[in-house]
Image 1 (cartoon, rainbow, N blue to C red):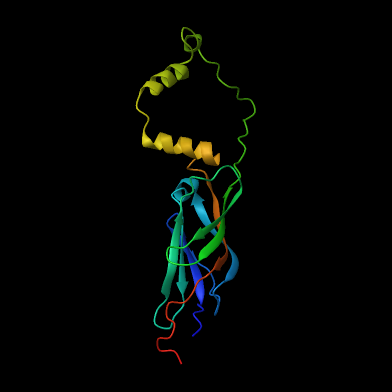
Image 2: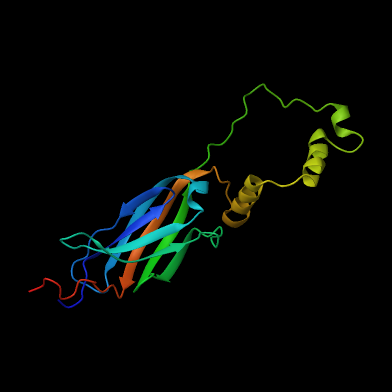
Length: 184
């Protein structure tokens, strides 16, 4: 055998996994396949994992894997990566977050906003401002930090629903590990 593999990529993100098609007898497969993972944005921030396998009659053999944390994402709609697998080769892929459009809130006709009481606005600001000052002095919990991170880096709240896309473009240097054994 020439060392060529029959590779595919398994994508794991947000507790979900999907598998690319198998490309026969190649060291440098091109997939250009897009996978959709629906859910909440907070489910995907932990990162995306890609695992390369070689299809084999006696069981698929791992060719390598990689993990990418998504903390580098910004409000950009698409981010491309080229990463080296743990054992051999390089994989090129893109990730995209597409938020579901929010429904616009429509005010009911005839209902006006209730004016705040004068006591809420006097001597030191609104009740909300007083509460905000109190909260600033308290310890910030981990969920607050996570939500702030989501808003600052991705421009979205962790409970925002949408679709996380992973496009597996191509790989280079995925040599089969079973060369020569029981081959004719």
